Image (cartoon, rainbow, N blue to C red; front, side, top):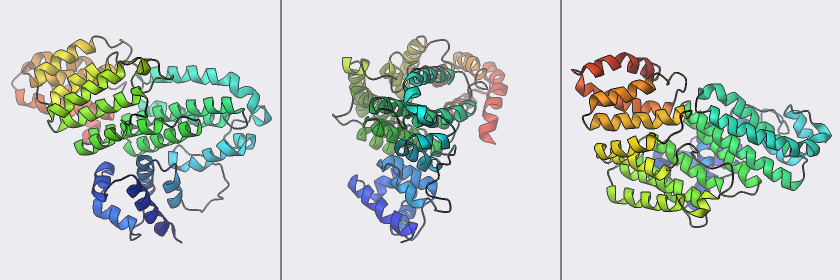
Length: 414
């Protein structure tokens, strides 16, 4: 049977098992409903990109991706690629084939894998923390090749090692993959971001952690949030709030749900979600969770910062500015990416409140650092700020800021 005929029925089965209508599924994936219907009926072929998105969203563990992979190469090969879907088969071989697969990954450890994996893991764990911190002050495209390589390397260490060490290696590899997905999103590649997030969930499951797959829904909801899809954001975030999940993941999901409600001005449900997020993230269980910490490590009170974010979308910019002013003062100086993210949202709130000169002062501070920490997600708020300030062209502060705004936005507007 052709891959087209295999893929469609399997996609329909998984979608129905998830309790999703075709309309809900198309909204969540940001794909045309008619196109998805034809794919399910076998009338249209699925692209590798669509397969990756469906795989990540439905938690299909790579099954859908494999159905669209052509068998032009030897199915036993372990050749890898920087694209998540293309090195999936190679990584799977590493997880099951033992030390021989390590050579295919270029690790050249041979029979020494079991003896070196344990001592090397603390080194890679420390490196993960360093790279996460470096991500606050470096361009994501510069970090991506290293992150991709380290993900494969740490996953490779799992081969041929005792089960305890193998689990630790797989879990650490899952965190490398998750962070790689975030950097891909910051680089403006949502497809790669979703692919790497799916890889992270699968690595975590192989290491005995069934929960990261639910956090992948929170990450997916961020993609739909920046795409302006409120319904998709809320739907995804709600799926990650099952009572069986750790409080940290549920709290982060509740925050994302609040942001989705704020997009459509639903103040009641937004504040309800924020209250739920605050309680979950402040719980002892959330604070004593597994390391590395899931989600931001640079915002001391994520629920408060998200409240400021939502207040602006709810049409209460003055209240938003007050909260964001307070919370931004608590950000560490080295966290340039995080400071810029919330700094521009803060400037946007002040501009919408009529405090144009203050907004320009804040924006001017962070426009200077954007070449060092470019961000596709932050760019969305910079564009909103530019539109807001365009209403005040007679302001000298706005005119003075225009050249710097234009320089930062030029690459995204071309």
